[in-house]
Image (cartoon, rainbow, N blue to C red; front, side, top):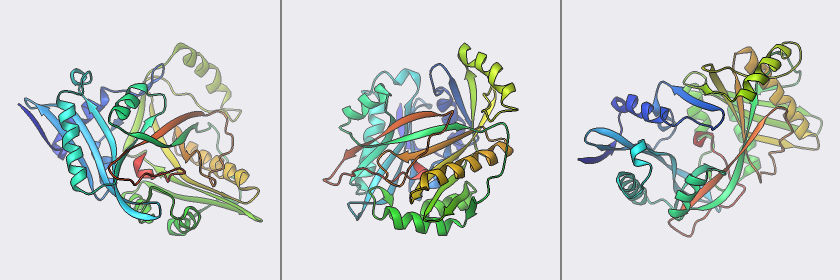
Length: 345
């Protein structure tokens, strides 16, 4: 018997087990360890997780949130799809249970009056991109993620200060204005993150006619990566780099089965001729703080067309491109640059 229902806390173990069957990466495989699957739904006022079961066995998940946002300067509703996966036996066919699960979710979001649904897909994930295109989704914009390892040494950089998040949000609001896909109330994500303990703060630096700031989201208490496979080349590099990093400002390369904790950097803003340089100093200060608190990885998110995201060069780092795919249900289509809601990431 096949059934579709809303997930509850009692399903947490089964949801995490299905998620664990999909480690990230190819040569370097990272498994995500966390205590609760329901971290993401807790960030939204209208978050939902639907599950498909066959004869009592979990075979599919589809998680989404109904969000109020601005597009074209006008308030609209949109659906954000942030998880869609199936048990291995179901992945080969969208014509079976997963297709029925998708149709149920689509019916619910249409009843909510959304103008479109959207999701973020890694640009080189050909399988997911084919599915999105088959569902008549189209690209609306790209954003990049820089992955920065924390250094093995720490220091303090003068001039970088942590400001009250409401003060920082006022600056963001002033600069991005009515940018497409920004939350109707920009402060909602910050307030929820502050209430749940994920918002570490907003860091800012000013000098003469230039300024920069960036926000930090800390998921180390509930979300960890674990390296389950490393290529031989990286193992060899680890033996070389880690000892040198105790003397020089080099990152530390983790070993297999080692836990990785994360801070996420978002909403970067640069103003003035030296904004980019100030942002680099801020990020380096955050990296030093991360090292002191045993945080292994920092990720930095920004829209590739955002004029205020003047991202400096960091070494070493990896760069990933994600594509925002939109399936329209009206003539309302967002255009880049898009606002990246930290709750989406």
